[in-house]
Image 1 (cartoon, rainbow, N blue to C red):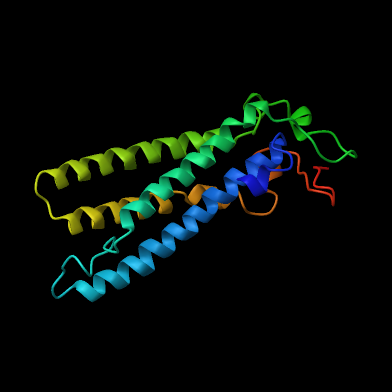
Image 2 (cartoon, rainbow, N blue to C red; image 1 turned 90 degrees about the horizontal axis):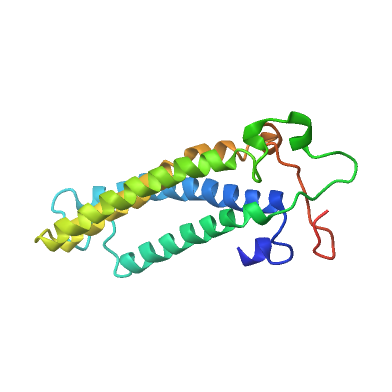
Amino acid sequence: FGCRTGKDWRDEFQLSMFVITFKASQFVAGVVQAIFVGAILYSSCIPDCSSADAPGSHPAFREALVLFLVRVALCWAALCLLPFATVKGGYRYEPLRGELRLKDVARKGGRVWYFMYYDAAVFGACVLMGYLVFLEGQNGRPAWVVNAQLFHLKALYGVLSFPWLLLKLPLADALVLALKPTKYNRAGQTV
């Protein structure tokens, strides 16, 4: 977040791309974690699953889960900066927002807000399910089962970030989001 927005945190395109890149990489990490790591851990514990072999069984799993939630909050903090962002960029053309004159792209960030509403709903559902899993753990369920279920909820949240990956396709920022692309010059200013 600091590297991406440290020079000029007011650029609408750079803030939107930070959020989109973070969420798209969350999908890739979620799929790798869910499919590969989870499958390997389960295949190793199939005959006799115990606390040492199940997904989410490493000692610092809960701390890693908290850091994951902090990274998600950091992404949403970048999104909260969008209403204060300015349209910057190329001096050779006007912002796409002025050409389209559509109500849903007139807001800063374009249609990225719809994707964030989806993400907030998915995150809320995963947090609710995580809370229910935690409550079951308080009622005597073994800790390794609770950690395995939390592992799968984290992976589910990552897999459900798939729509963000579509925004990383070429021209998606212009066609779907209607954002004006910007880059950094050697002085670290957006142009």
